[in-house]
Amino acid sequence: MAKYIHQLADWPNFKWDDKALLSALTMVRHKQGRLRGYMEVLGFSLKNETLLQTLTLDVLKSTEIEGEILNPNQVRSSIARRLGMDIAGLIASDRNVDGVVEMMLDATQKFDKALTKDRLFDWHSALFPTGRSGMQKIVVGKWRSGPMEVVSGALGRERIHYKAPEADVLEKEMKVFLKWFNAEHALDPVLKAALAHLWFITIHPFDDGNGRIARAITDKPETWDRRHSRQLK
Image (cartoon, rainbow, N blue to C red):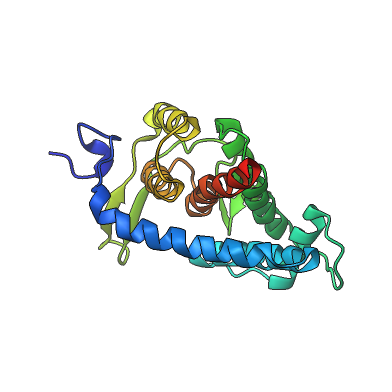
């Protein structure tokens, strides 16, 4: 009997209730429309400042979930430099800050670029420029080579909450995921982003950084939707 979602016979054929999701998706789209309307009436400088603030918060909050607190001024400066923004008070930024920023900007600014294995490897390498997560040496820029478990509890009394797919099936699992992600879908981009996040986190293909990369992947369908809708106007 299957214990985890990836062990089900029909994995990864996700199912959902459109009627149950309709009201939530409608509310999200309504709020997005209002925000876009506000953005349209802003001047060029205010639009740039709003973009800078939004991206800065995106990076900060994404890393906070992993228990890592970045310097907000370093994040802001790193983003501004990469976007070519001429703002006052730029400071030097650490390598780990630049790595997270580089990944997030690649996901959100290069929205029309296919998500590939090599691109994910580049993101992972950017997140861990020293090849270490804290004091622990990890495999960087490659799929993990060992088991991945979510465990809690004291030594000798551990409780296993989840086991990800074995390392020897990661290549196959990620190939299926990437083919789906890059394909044309009639899915609402918000729903596609949610499915992509769940699917990627379930596979958990890297030694570390899976949450941050999953959130970068989640940003991509919505970013493409915003830019594409503007291009069609």
